Amino acid sequence: MPVDTLLKVETTGKWTSGVQTSVKVRSFEPFIVDEPTDLGGADKGPNPVELVLAGLSSCTSVMIAIIAKEQNFTYDAVNFSNSGELDLAGLMGAEGVSPHFQTIDFTVGISTSESIEKLQQLQDEVEKRCPVMNLLRDAKIPVTSQWVIN
Amino acid sequence: MPVDTLLKVETTGKWTSGVQTSVKVRSFEPFIVDEPTDLGGADKGPNPVELVLAGLSSCTSVMIAIIAKEQNFTYDAVNFSNSGELDLAGLMGAEGVSPHFQTIDFTVGISTSESIEKLQQLQDEVEKRCPVMNLLRDAKIPVTSQWVIN
Image 1 (spheres, each protein chain N blue to C red):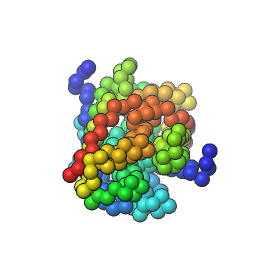
Image 2 (cartoon, rainbow over the protein chains, first blue to last red):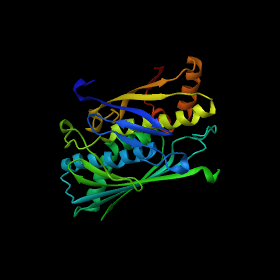
Image 3 (tube, each protein chain N blue to C red):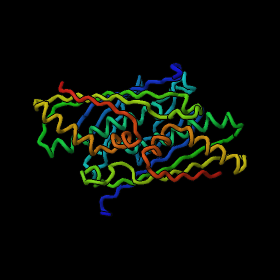
């Protein structure tokens, strides 16, 4: 195994009140993760599964930057939107119901003068190598992604 | 399927510069996801895989709050720390190397006067029903978790 490609990442956190947690990453200001009031929280921040969806968009963004360079693909702007559906019966303890995402829809809009073929090539390579996309697909979540030119 | 237990969550985002993304969840202030400088970023915020680890701690925190009530388990404080190891060869395109976590270590420290047996019971049920923990385990990531009484 090529030891010099190994990367260790770390976070810490502490329960603050209710279903609320303060999370700390490296030297950044701690941020609050909570639940909306209808899910029993005080609605002071995004919830944990929203963080995972935020991870999907931002990871895709990193991979676009890296792979666009490799493929000489130029672009001016990228927008992301995603949604995920969960069945709360899973976390409430119903047997046979996954507590995480049943499905995820993901749209990537790119402002570019490149061709549809080059966009497809970019999408294919990004999705093949993106850590968070692969995490979700390895967990057998059907992720429907649509890449469009804006 | 019990339709009233379905929950849809959504996020949006936009590429800002380099490998940096601004992510928006509901009505909260957008936050910046970036990479450290040694990974090609401007280090303006946590990176995408750190968000996933933050999701694991905060999701566990929500589930502890819910399940402790069910089990009449009382506690005064909870702390979380986790680390994950990735092999960057995966995202660089090496065949056969997963681009996401090779392993994750997770420690939960609880201040409580409950017994070790009751703590084990809490841990078992939380890990069985926690959305983010199940996502990681469904993706076949070996997650080593250790729950201790502080």
